Image 1 (spheres, one colour):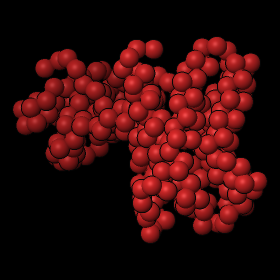
Image 2: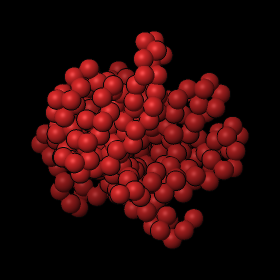
Image 3: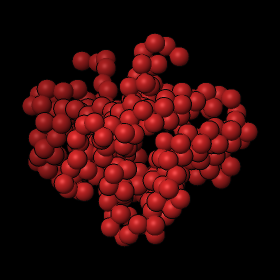
Length: 274
């Protein structure tokens, strides 16, 4: 682990622990994973949350070693340890500093942003905070369940469990929180997309290509293709353009080929070319 990765892991887990103790736990918002279970166990058995996080994380690391191997344990080890430590150290911060928020919804949103930002920093360095990620990897390995779906299923299941312990309103806030921090994680890892990739299937490649090159001043690549159903000759145009020109290109397609088929995706990194 490089110094940068080490520092980012420390920073990310601290932000997660801070968000958990300030915005999530006091309002009984269930974020999924060991954090969500810790909140449930506190309500059911009056267990100390930071201790529950440490014990659950340790148990999952053992399971990870047995079922996934040393490599996966290494990826989760530091995040699990630091998160458990910071969850304990920041558990009584509200006794000394007033971070209280009157609105549970606002706590859900702010907590989701901070929690997702912290996890995103850890993920970006190639490590995890353990917990639900370990269970998701086990489901992926042994049941071939997609990682993203696995994490969602685990978090959603824990949120539903929380709704039985607390109330239905808790489930709604918890789902909103899970969605927010999932989006923030993606944004931290990938950045905010400043470009769009256009894939255009058209019978009029010349006019559209000229429009992209001469009017929008961007490059375009043309590929010959044949429609599998119609057997007609087609062209596939590929262009990456700034988001600000998105509607300009759509207007050009409407002008030069109303029958063109196209789809658009986000481009997070663009290098090379002219």
